[in-house]
Image (cartoon, rainbow, N blue to C red; front, side):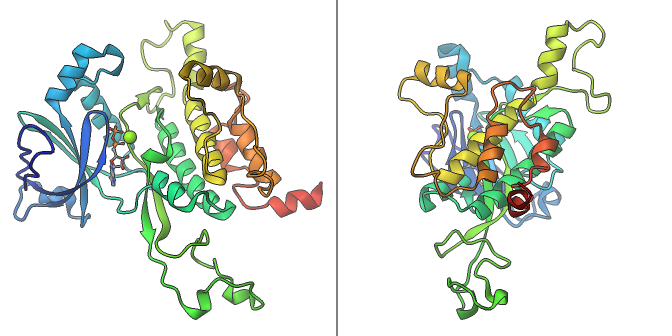
Length: 333
Ligand code: ADP
Ligand code: MG
């Protein structure tokens, strides 16, 4: 239960057996794990066959804290991540929180495993997603965001790397093979979403990584956190819109899935920042030529610079393209 050479010190996790490494962040490594037999914490993971354990090195936290203030992660931040993860964990499209504890050298955040890994990897593998597959993924992301926003929490780090999935194994059969169907019952994507390549496809999608998340509203009062009544108007206004950063994130993910590259990109960080602040992106030809007007409309409403005009989560969930009534819209027009 101690993978060697991955961290300077030995990783001691008596309650869990760490298997292979499956991910990595600035301060963390993530391992596949199983509950150790007879462990006193086994009751916590009785609903999970496999787990993912995010191991955060205390040593690395402290050294980064001194070197680079902007990227500092402290014990308080880890505890905050855990507290928020606990708060939002019940959401169907949120990665379930299972357990948290620490040893002399590490913090351990135990979560349910999503065996497909990152949506990012699927975009790379498939180049880009069909509109159906994009809709399937983005709807589940939107449900995760609605759950978080309803609890007054902003995720603030929505990107394809933090979107994880469970694969549906696609077993090719003569009735399901790709073909222009004359019998409507044999439509190739009936019941399963196939972007056109065999192998595993995306089933359940869940949002992970609460390292940058923030509690903005008190859970039951919907008032901004802090001393109510003494908050300055610009703070109240800012707080009201601060969950809207996630809607921008959803827009960037949707754009990227549909065409295979992100809406904003530049080698130079200051040029990139400038492009983002002006909302300077295009539906680049020829990649966007075949994509429906409904999809473009949804992207436009999400990548709106003014957070007040930008789709909020309820508006996005009511979007015609998201609800697949594009053809109805064109007929009406
Ligand atoms: P960081 O805050 O360092 O970005 P994350 O929580 O995003 O850490 O985890 C880093 C990576 O580890 C993820 O992008 C993903 O590839 C993998 N990972 C994290 N949690 C899980 C999980 N529950 N199931 C599968 N893979 C995971
Ligand atoms: Mg991450």
